[in-house]
Each structure stands twice: as C-alpha cells, then as structure tokens.
Amino acid sequence: MAARKGINFRVIIKFLGILLLILSAFMFLSIIWSLNYKEPDAMNALLISGIFTAVTGVLFYITGFRHDHRNIHKKEGYLIVTLTWACITLFGALPFWISGAIPSYTDAFFETMSGFTTTGATILKDIEAMDKSLLFWRSTTHWLGGMGIIVLTLAILPILGVGGMQLFVAESPGTTPHRLHPRIQQTATRLWGIYVGLTATQTLLLMAGGMNFFHSINHAFSTIATGGFSTMNDSIAGFSPFLQYVVIFFMVISGVSFALHYYLLKGQFSRVTNNEELWFYLKIIAGFTLVITTGVFFTNQIGIEESFRASLFQTVSITTTTGFITADYMAWDNSIWFLIFLLMFTGGCIGSTSGGLKMIRVLVLIKNTRMELKRLIHPMAVIPVRIDRRAIPQTIITNFLAFFLLYVLLFFIGAAVMSFFDLGFESAIGASIGTLGNIGPAIGMVGPVSSYAEVPLAGKWVLSFYMLLGRLELFTVLLLFSPSFWKK
Image: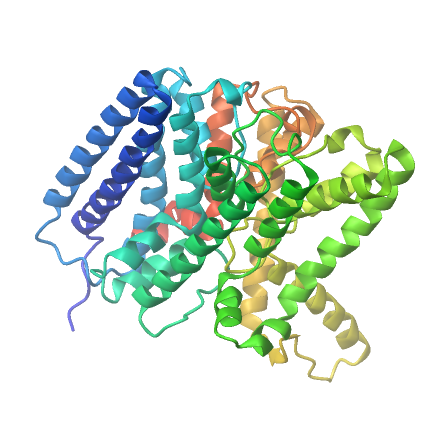
C-alpha cells in the first residue's frame, strides 16, 4: 500500500461547513425568543449571524464536496476537533457583538468560548439587562458544548464511516470513549438521548418549583452541561431551597459518566454500583461537604440546614466544574475557601460533561502512589494498580502522570502570565485554574460574586485558549503545536 500523503484540508473544511450549518440552525432557533419578548435588535443580530454562518457553512461544504469524508484519519480528526471549537466560537460570538450587547469582539469571543467549553466564566456585570433571546443563545452554547457539537453531528448525520471514531475520541471528555454500541453513530445517539432526557426532566422539575419556562430551560441547559451560565445576576442564590436542591441533584448526576446513566436505564445495576470512580466521586463530595458545613456553621452564625445547603451546593458546583453559586465562599473563613480551591483540581467522572482533572485520574494517581510505597517495602513483588478489579496497564498510568504534570505546569504558567497583567496573586491563580479546569468562578477578582470583566483584553485571549485546552483535555490541542504532527 502506498504511503499516505499529507493532511487532507478539503475534508476538514467540508466538515467545518457541516458544523457551521448546524450552528446556524440553533441561532435561528433563538429567534423564537426574540419574537416572544419583542426584541428587534436581538432578532436582527441573530438573523444576520445565522445567515452569515449558514452561507459560510455552505461555501465550506462546497469547497470539499468531492472529497471523501468517511475515512478521516487521526491527524484530520485532531485538526477537525480543534478547528471546530475555534470556528464555532468565532461565529457564535457574532450575535452578542452585532447586537451591541457585548460591544467588544474580544469580550464576545471570551463569553462564547466560555459557553461552548462549559466554563461559565463571564464578562457580564448585569446579566439581567441582556435580551432574553441572547441569554437563550448564551445558554445554548453551553448545551451544545456539554456533550459536544461533533458528537451531536455523529448522532444526526450518519455520514462519517470509520472517521467518526477518530472525532469521538478527540472530542469526548475523559480518557477513552464509552462504546455503548458497536456503531459510533448509535453510541452518539444514545448519549444525546440521555442528555436531552435529563435536560427535559430538570426543566419540568424547575417549573414545578415555581420557575417559569424560560428560566427553567436556560438553567437546565447550563446544569446538565455543567456550565454555570445563569439568567440571573446572583446565579442560583435568589431561588428557593427546593430549586437549589434540584440544581444540586442534577449537577451531581451530570458529573457522572453518561455511560453509567445508560447502564442504569438498561437495568445493568452492577456496572453502576461496582464503579470505583463513581464511589470515589461521591465520597469526595460527601467528605468536603461535611467539613465545609461544620466550618460554615461555626463561623458564620447561620442555621444548620442553610449551612449544609450552601456548603453542599458550592462543593458540588466546584467539583463538577459547573460554576453556579449560592454564596460568596470568599467571605467564609480562609481555611474553608482554601478547601474549595483544592476542589478545583478534581473534576467529575470520565465521560461526563464536567471538566477538570477527572476523578479517575485522581483515584489512579492516589492508588499508584500507595502501590509505590508498598513496592519500596517489597521490591520483588508484582503489585498492579486495580480499578474495578481490573489491573490498569502501565501505559495508562504513565498517560495519567503525564497529564497531571502537564496540567499542573500549565496552571503555573497561566498564573504567571496572568500575574503580568497585574491581577494579583489570588486573582492570577484563580483565573488560571478557573479557565483551565472549565470551572468559571474561582478566587480573587474572578471569585463567585465577581466577573472576568476587569481582565485585560490580552489576558482574555490567553484565558480563552486555556478554556479550549481544558475542554479538549490538553493533548488534542497541544498536539497541533508539535512539529512531528505536521510531518507526512
């Protein structure tokens, strides 16, 4: 067989065209709210943006029309995924910019990247002043980015053949994709089916608690995607305890692998109850909630239920990298918000919509450290690291170690870069981990009751890149900066 030639850029452009057409359809969908709330400026901005995005998508598709898209190779897969996220952000920012709701394109790009990567970091100071249709578009970016727009494309367009697996691997959160069906299209369809079902269920429960349909669907979009964009200036703080508990519940289950949701629906309960990562995830939430509740109760002079609810909410929101808030944890005792800062280095389960390191990596690294201590005592013993009673290959452990070290290195680099913009120590490390971990609200001037509005323009581009790095789990993006990637 002859050696393959270089990267087929026409296939990449063709696929970008398909994705832009899908993106434009969701822009047009947002216009419904413009009509309902009589928002002519927002409607014009969404209409112009949708048409421009659709026309560009058609031109891109025509450019690569004659090229076979069913056999995408690894290099094309990584390029498509990274370019897709950059491309949809460039176009997705247009409604905010054209409408004048966010006059600076840099700010509009930052807000949109935060939306698609489900980071939840915002530059808006008065969210409630924005037109409802633009708020819906803002929440829609979360919802599309949570499960992944490419996974959506695989679900609704069975056109990719074996190339679909390359895209699924490159975009899906976690270490390896869960194959729920031998055909990747069926896997994508089932994942999106669960995603839609959870969104609809939460919307109904929020409405049952007294929230209107508009706010319910927006908060459901943000919760299931573990994004954190709210339609209210005070996030979830102004809602009733019942509504807060509903949001907590759906944040927790959205931080669980969607493959486990599927197994639960299929009645395969043992695959859920025997999952070590799930139990580790729940223990982390329970343990930190207990400690933080105790601290809040004894230092803030509020009732035990309110202390518990505020502590549980913040713990779950940070662990799942959602970013909703009900309390200003920076106003709590220093030891408490330091614990919350530590939670920013965790994340949800593999295969969930959460960002961060992921619980499986943290668990494996802890187990590997424990095994290394045993090997020092028994150097001749063969002591494998086991997860779910299965030995983890050394290559996976090495990958996890490399990911962890690179993650920490990037965190320090990001903090150092942000310190050059005079953000101050707390704000610099907060902005770095808040964006790299796709958390959103962090500490310092980018804390829970603040925004990223005061970050300089250059800093917002750096943080936008960090959000992309975090969403695509570092390697997918950083591979493109490797000289060997571009060699034939």
